[in-house]
Length: 138
Length: 428
Image (cartoon, rainbow over all chains, first blue to last red; front, side, top):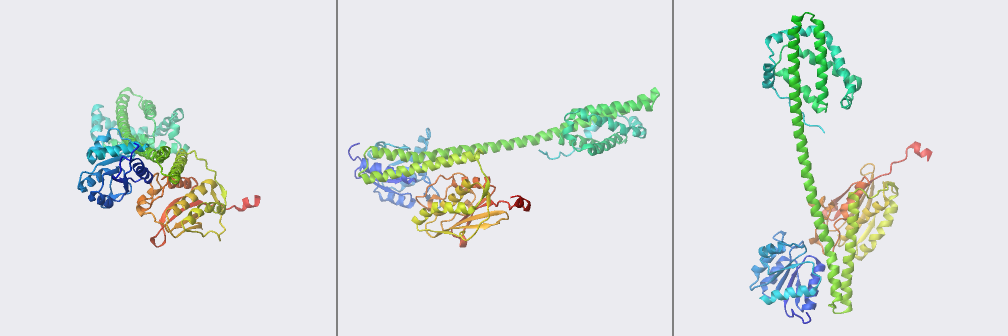
């Protein structure tokens, strides 16, 4: 990944751990050249989705700081809402901290996400590759 | 353990069945009634013989702990029992009386084989005396038969009562076992949850360390300034990891009962004075006022462990500073609240803790609601450790709402060192 593979792409990062979010953002910006928006606020996230200006949402499964209509919400639920709001096909990459072998298919299916990213991700190239492959599918 | 007393069941059918089985006839009943007054004089000796068995029985000494007075009472009970044999009415009420005896024996864990063998001694004794009483062969036969039948009836009732009481006892034990099993399963589930939480919490900072380090190594930072910034994140993640590991070691040492406590007479002033400066810098950097209301007080000594006292105080002070964005953190000391204790209060003007979380926050990994603030990180073990430490030092700890419903007051108590008695003071 020597060229800026994600140049001009707008990516929304929804991640409750500030340092992990920072890593995602830096990895995508530096290695891919994409433009990142960070948010954990559900109305803001839905607003971005509805604008039709996003190319991908990188969504954490566990969202300790996010709530919707007075209750906690997780990435699986939020994924469906984001997809519904978006005027065009919007790929969602679902990230989770726990290694859940076997749960991958179930998560993908219930959430409607396009891809699944198993954390931890140390290598920014892997992250960028995953993001790019999903955007290219659109 | 004490089993709930099983209700003696009216065993009418069983006593009637036994009477039929043993051929207890109206003639026998008449004979027994006649026999009663003639046997009365032998009853004291019968009781002596019965209780003479006790020293030979290893289990009995555990039950007969009341000394000679108890044995005398029991002897009179045994005489009452023997009089019952001759009362001529062998009905449900009679059976109920006999069942009471069996239930009582099971309740006090008296070994049944001992009683049954002692009953044999009683039987042999009564038969021997009966033979003395009736030298002629004809009468002797009829009287010994009647006495044998009623003694057999009693033995049957007693064995049946033993069986029923033992079943009831087993039922209770079984319930207790089920309960213990459920508690164990619950503890196990908690342990699984705890391990999952620990592994998640350990991995998170570790992952940040690895991913940011790799980023620097891959040359993805635009300039040295950014590289520095990323390394600062690596450093703070390392610090968090270290804090978490230390706290985990502390809590497992506490729970294994291995954390040494060294309770000694301490001047709280020394602990306060050496701990407050540790949070003063942090408070100043947030423009918080740190007020020490204890400065003018001379404080009574407490009985405590200096290191653990300081650890608890530092934890509560750091929390107060951490969760307060503006205003003051104030420390107070109240003597004899409650009587015999020193109460230390740390009041802040921070975000407070909702009522429904007051107790939970002293549990492992329950963090202050992260929604309400950003950038606050902790192991989630600090208050759990503080609570256990305070309890180890025979004090208590809690959290209350601050004045006017704002902020919070964290408090803990430590026992005051007992004042010297006059005698001790003189010899000192």
